[in-house]
Amino acid sequence: MAKILKKEVLADRIFRYRLDAPRIARKRRPGQFIILRPVQNSERIPLTIANADAGAGWIDIIFQVVGRTTVLLSMLGEGDNILDLVGPLGQPTHIEKFGRCLCIGGGVGIAPLYPIARGLSDAGNMVTTIIGARTERLLILQSDFKAISEDLHITTDDGSSGNKGFVSNVFQELHDRGEKFDVAFVIGPVMMMKVTSQLTLAAGIRTYVSLNPIMVDGTGMCGGCRVTVSGKTRFACVEGPEFDAAGIDWNEMAKRLTSYRGFETAALEKHECELDKAIKA
Image (cartoon, rainbow, N blue to C red; front, side):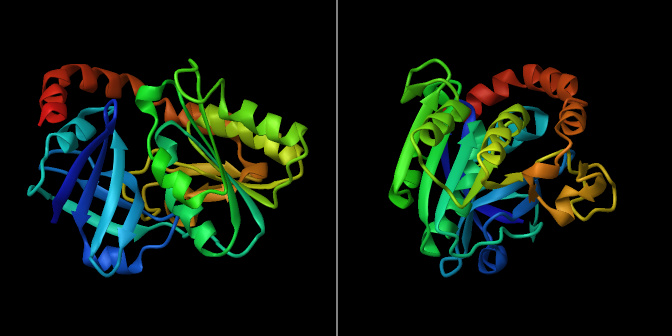
């Protein structure tokens, strides 16, 4: 079990929980994730460790309500216990002093980008960050990124905050005016990662993406998280979640991620009333 120490609503249907998890907090590194089961008869879901304090013994997780299990998770409050929590899982991000680093996050993918950007900053890199969402109501962690970024750019599809457009548009503008970067990390929806990484790779920037395909056991046993990278089958939960963007079979991954979308939508609609209660709690 893991006690919820703090609960926040960051944006529309996006929550941040601070969990009492001292052993995970001591061992976690940027890029790693946990798998949790909030209550009995719920599914196990993977969530990136968005932040941690080894001394105080807590970790932060950020999640967006998209289906039954995240609704059930959102209904828990401060002082409640999450039934099962295991981690840290996955391979940590390779962090060194690269020089100029570009961090690009879209939607709830902004959350897993933060510990990576912070790790790069702590290693002495100059970090330029681009974060974007469909609308201002869905933007998260602006102040957190501002504190660690040399340059922060914000964009929304509808222009309600920052630049109007996509994160890929902002990168193209930076590139066109001669900005140079040694490495890029891109995290967000599949199409956003595909389009943006194609641009960064074309600009000659070594680019890594964090893949969050369907995961079940988190140990590579079930095969549910398999992806094709450079023509080879890889398991994102144990060999990732980060991979070189140049080798990703994006079409295959997009198809896999939509397999259960209908079930998620139906479950979310069924639990709308419970979600409203969780937001107001």
